[in-house]
Length: 127
Image (tube, rainbow, N blue to C red):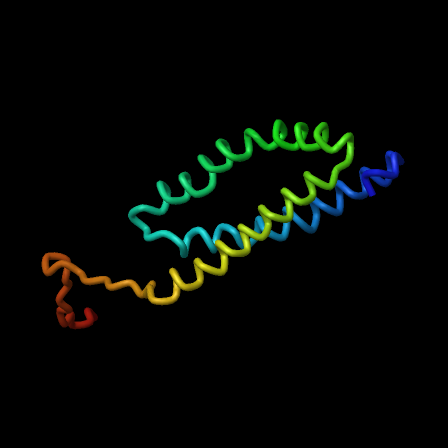
């Protein structure tokens, strides 16, 4: 769709990619990350897993993609191969995280301190 050179077709490709690709992941990723890390380390784990890796790896992607297109004399297939490999790595990580999440129990154990217990007292109704 992008190689057609037609402006409306390029916009259609962008809208379809953002509508189905990005939006479908955004809804479920919050629940996935909240189950992946314990409560006490959730923010740190989330930041390290998403933001830092996105900045370090994602920052070099335009440079890598441009160098691959120049290397292949203007063809886009090396960038496509790179994108396919990164998607396969993501699928592998999601698959392996199932084994990581399976043995954990998310049941809460809540116990009230003795000082907060309330004793019921019989109150006679007033006339």
